[in-house]
Image (tube, rainbow, N blue to C red):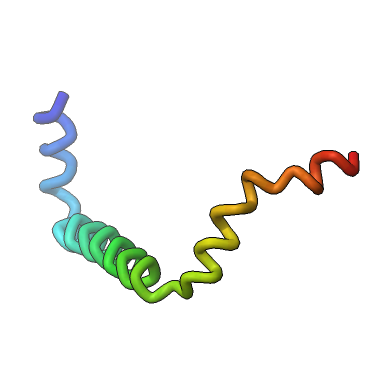
Length: 61
């Protein structure tokens, strides 16, 4: 099966750029996520932590 796919991929011109682009997108996404986690304000993080535990909104229904 892989030989069949590989044979078609070798005939497409310029296809070697797609794995590089996808690796770059993957790497940049996780670098940006890493930076966001370490620069987020502590009060925002603690507010987000309390959302699942907040029962006041559930009891008003």
